[in-house]
Image (cartoon, rainbow, N blue to C red; front, side, top):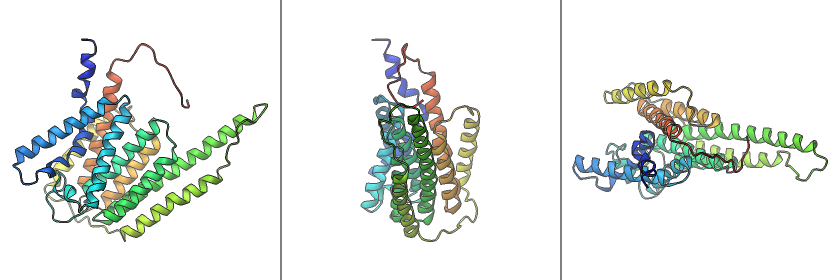
Length: 310
């Protein structure tokens, strides 16, 4: 009984997962928008602790993070259908009167989407599913976002990811065909990639609609406001922490490139560029910390591989 107690309490030391949980739990203060600041802080911490516990209640670490990020996407989507009160009155909304998805929550939506993609790939789902997900997310942000930065950032993220996924699919299918040619009898007929053209057209059609709905991008970066000095401090702190663990790569290469493209594009077109960058590096640092916590945990005596490719 005592042997399993530390494993049950492992979630309490998962500071990396706590960053993701706090990003989703930042909606919670909108439940009591007119309450005192201390009560809003308690609501934020309580909801984030619940999300962190849910993250560790699942068998797969990547799956747990994907579920929590998916809950954030679902909450933001439902909020956009009902006027966007949570996005305005949440911890990152700053109490603005505009109803819709602001730049900070929109940037989080892009990053949450990539974390969901990581979970989908971890359970060996169809890789093309991540291209469809990000294409749909781009169309949604182009429709509900308050600035073109969100639609353009999400669209370039989706295009980057879809190109890399389709390239990988073509390479993998070619490798399978070559392997089958060495067999005395071909048992499985492998598609020659023509079906990928149709699926690519669907994804890029979603991206084209997202750009049309977003409108023309504008460079609205006039300078850094005084309160964005805190964002700059967060960026420096997280970059130092990430560079100290250069060997840890919390995302596959395709998702890392899409993460970078989405962050840079959204920040360049956003009215809160340093805030977008701060959220991106903070969440990435959280993923690094979660990976570090997993590798430091005691491993079982027997490791079995149940499927998948080498």
